[in-house]
Every structure is written in C-alpha cells, then in structure tokens.
Amino acid sequence: MKLKSTLCILFILAIISCKQKTTEKETPAMKEPTVVSLDDQLAFNELKKLKLDSTYTNLLDPRNVTEAEFKTVRKSWVEFHKKVSAFIKEENFKWEVPDSTIFIVNKIYFDKNGAIDYYAFRILNDSVPETKREEYEKVLQKFSKEIKINLQRDEQFAQCGNTKYLNY
Image (cartoon, rainbow, N blue to C red; front, top):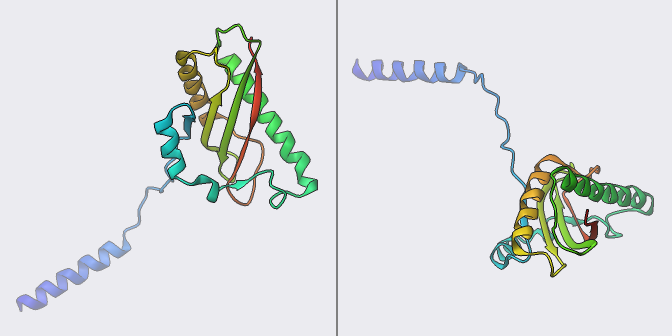
C-alpha cells in the first residue's frame, strides 16, 4: 500500500512538473566588448591565448570578399573610424600633446552583425603619456558598447589597420 501511494505521488508530481510553462523568456546575456591596449603585455598575452584569428575571418582577405563587396566593406570601415573620431570628440577627450595627428594601430573583432567583440589597439605616438593611453582605452570601451560597424557577414570577422586621428 505504501509503495502504491509513493508511486502515485511521484506520478502526479511528474505530470504537474511537465505541464508547468515558464513565463520568463530567456534572453541571451549581452557580452561586453573587450578593449585591450597592446602596450599592456599581460592583457595582450591573454588576448593571444584566445586565438581569435583562427575563429574570425579577415574582412579584406580576397578569399572572403568579392571585388563587388570590396567597396561596401571599405566604406563601412572608413565610416566606422569616422564614428570613432566623432565619439572621441563628443566625449571631450583631449590628447594634450603637441602632435597634430595621433597614429593608432587597431585590430578589431566583430560579431556577424557588426557589433564589437574585441578591440585591440596601440598608440604609436611616443608623446602620449600613460594616463592618456588609459583614458583613451576607457573611451574606446564606452564606444565599443554603443557603436557597430555598418556591415553584416555570415560569420564573425576581423579587420586591422593603421588610423590617423586629428588632434583637436
């Protein structure tokens, strides 16, 4: 009798639990972009361990972009850097160095919708002090959360290049 009662209770609990519907929708967690100064050797080494170049296709590799697509890709890349420049200005970021132009090497990894996953950079101007480099990294972190490249692909992609920003 005791066994029948236990089995009956377990059966009822199983039916009830199967019929329950969740009212909460699961939303994927938004991953914050990672911004890394290539001058920070520890952070750079951590980034290298991820082997991103093996999972993000090179945007301008001729095997990944047709001649017809090249103009669109190039335009989106130029517009992206215009957005960076405008964002720096909006944030009232000042380099506070005498150089008229700031030279930066970038390697940016995007998801397939153009959102930034990883943003690695190195400021080439020796005159830029460490404090300004750190401040620029914070500006890029904020930028990376808010701005995308105007380009979508079938898979995640990366692009690198040298950029010159006017020192306002």
